[in-house]
Length: 321
Image (tube, rainbow, N blue to C red; front, side, top):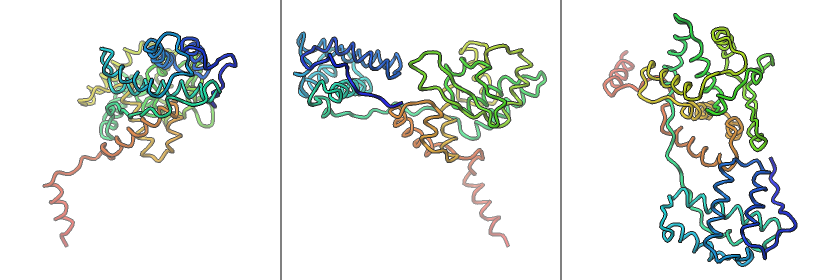
């Protein structure tokens, strides 16, 4: 989606922050931003409005004012502000004043020179190739039974093959599956207009349709692909991990990150991975950084590395005439 930074013509530099924040909220909604993002961004600006003298014209807000505001947020407000929250508040200021500047309300952007310190959240946990193999083998064993139950395989295979989120998984309806196409795909859909930009078509994993047909018959599906609560599906993943002998608690998030890592290692273009995950370019910068770090520290094969003794023995055998 191409974002427009055009502001309404009635907005001026003599206005206070309050009406401008309301206009910015409408702009963010129009751009399809999530309710969580809108609430956080506008909340940060309302905090600035409460900090400044009442009815301060936006055109008189300087970079020094914004720096003093951030110092107050960090140390003078009396409320803890984590590095991640402080970084988000600077992002809010930069986005808001950039919108006003590019829309012609302000001649200069007072937030342009604010220093943004990047804060990376902890690395997510992923499955190693050996753990993926153990999970798939366990799910396959349950698929053939007895009793035959294809549900664990269908869920696990779909998550690892598509990288979809928990909320997207529980909202899949049977008519979102294009099974008769030359290249079958899942159509990830959203009912709310502000999330339409996340809609996408993702190819279904090889062999998934055959397992799905078994599962569909076993559970007499009518409308939804997984007619259970998200928590019940979480339990299913956890139970599968326990049965496979994994120490990790298998989750939707773990499968999503593992899927993206497998795509990266398979040579998929970074932008194609971003589109497959349905994330914005802004979110992707941090996600891609994490993927690269995970790639460097996660085993690449399902084969266990030989112990020093085993390695020395193999070398000796290879040197035997």
